[in-house]
Amino acid sequence: MSVKVTVKLFASLREGQFDARLLDLAEGSSPATVIAALGLAQEAVTVVFVNSRHAAKDQVLMTDDVLALFPPVGGG
Image (cartoon, rainbow, N blue to C red; front, side, top):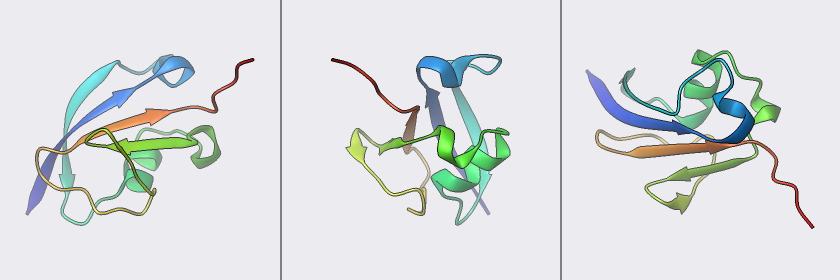
């Protein structure tokens, strides 16, 4: 089985990648799985949202979830 998840990348994570894409993932996949599959370093992603809610990198993703990945956020 597989799950279909919309993945959105923000800020520097978009470089050489995409803004948003529907991915077909193996059942039991997590944000950490997606990060690795995209060739991103785990430490490059510090903020994870699933369906507009803060989530852990080990949360199991379900069909129709929207996964948003952000790099470290700076500001003043």
